[in-house]
Length: 175
Image (tube, rainbow, N blue to C red):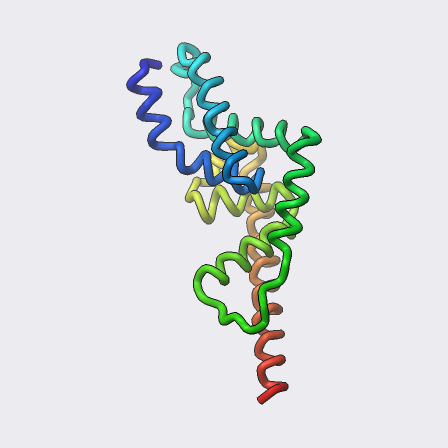
């Protein structure tokens, strides 16, 4: 892979890689560091990248694997637990849900999903990857991915319905 090809691949995938890393590591700074570290490691292997048929999936898988390694480290675990605790704080009942709050709610609910399901939702529904690409990235069977995605979407749907129905019941109670 030439320097120009590598730079073009980096430019095309950098945002997706960052969003995946951020979803896994939570911290923006740690996600940015992860992506830079993966780029450095891939640059060192640039001569071998021409032999890889799906370079996009390879780059995404490299980020996923790096993030999993970081999560396993004690320092990342402590930081992740603090960040999750911060994210799980419930919003003030006085606030109206605008777009940012709705997105925040979905993110909060997504953290209740098992890791694999959360990754699959991120890759399919947010990043727009095809099932074959997700299978390559996560080293899973396409049917297992479809099943996990279906279960994750059902969970998200039910959690959102439950959340908003509760809000409606609470509103009716005070009307």
